[in-house]
Image (cartoon, rainbow over all chains, first blue to last red):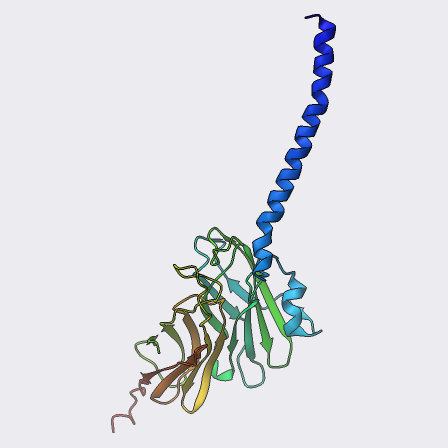
Length: 170
Length: 115
């Protein structure tokens, strides 16, 4: 074979490789769409992450929440999303004039955003509650507290969940 | 109807703020998971849990599917007189549970108490 002939053969190969790459890319794209389809069919919103305003707005309704005065204890690395211990402490004297009325626990990814509401009052003595959560994947967990004067404060914590509470792949 | 367990401190004096640990036996089915036959398990979570003490509600929680099965709650309340802590809860099926737990408050032993 002459060098010129082998060069022309090489040049002919280039479009074939291009076509092959194109069809591969199309295949990968089609696979990704097909894989995402069942999640949509189930009507679950757990695959999408809400933003902080999206999580807080249904409760705040236009009011402003301060990101201080509250401590949210949550493990940084969660091995099992079905059982996640959480503790919320709010700075409050818990007197008749100034106390915490509600503590909300909100999830960024769960199908149900509001995981729990705690009702407290001056009879509680301390604005602190603990619970165990279910988390559908790695996400931001937000604790929101409402004071007796109507003001809100919140704190968020990131949780890296290795095994989701929902086994739908979200 | 499920079981529940409540843990209070060993000794309590009037006016103390005490921690209560409450464990309720409940599957807390989310409604998103399937059983072994592939059928969806209907949602069954505790909708409301209240604790009453001394003629007043001292704790109330409205859980959802975001709370783990066999939920554990810790909360604080101020004890005054000896009495009973009454825990009640109701789930999606309308089944209600109740737990009565005595609250034993030690009256401080002073010179007048011994008389």
